[in-house]
Image (cartoon, rainbow, N blue to C red; front, side, top):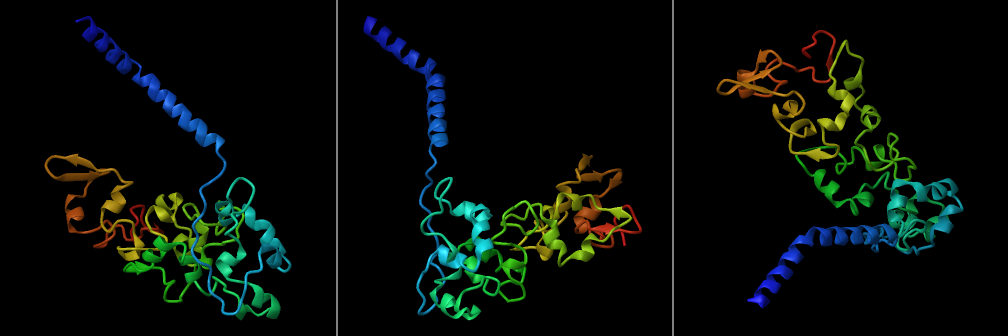
Length: 271
C-alpha cells in the first residue's frame, strides 16, 4: 500500500511540475535560436546557362558595376543571400541571376549575359509560386512578354519599403500607379479603401477572379463594410437594406457602386 502511495505522489509531482518543465523547454529553445547566427545552407536554382562562358565571381562584375555591387549586400536579395550576419552565401552572387560572366567581360555585349529585364524566367526559376500565379485566368501579362518583373521590382534595390525598391509590394501603390494612374485621379468622393493599398482588393500577379480581385463577389466589399443581420436573411449595410442587391450580384454591378475607386458625383460611389 505504501509503495502505491509513493508512486501516486511521484506521478502527481510530475503533473504539478509540468508547466515549469514546459517553460524551461521553451526558454531553452528561445535561447538557442537567439544565440545561433548560422542559417541553414541556401538551396538555389541553377544559374542561367550561357554557352562557352565561365564563372568569374562578384569582384569581376564590380569592375564595371561598382554601385550595384556595393549596394547589393543591403538589398532585399542581398540580405536573403547572406549565410550569416555579414557574409554572402558562397553559392549566391551576380551570376546566380545573370549567368556566367566571362564572355560578357570579354566582349562587353549585352547578348553575352542574361538580363532579367528581358527574360522574366530568370526570376521565375526561383519564384516558382509566382510563376504559377501568372498562369491564372486573370494575370499580368508577364509570360506573354507584355511586361517584366523589373517593371515593378528592383532586384538591386536597397530599401524594400520604397516603391519598387525591393521584393515586397504590400504598401507600394506607387508601383501600380505607374500604369493605372487613372484609378488614383483626385475625386470629390474618395473610396477610403484606396488608403489601405491596392492589394487590399487586388492580387499583384494573378488570380482566379476578374480584375485579379481577391474575392469575386460582394464578400470582397463586406470584408470592410460590416453587415448587420435583421430578421430572417435580411442584410443592412448602414441604414440601407441590401438583401436583394447582394443576392443579385456584386456591390458594383447593376448600376450600384460602380465607381469603386472614387466618384465625382456621388458619395455612394456612383458614376
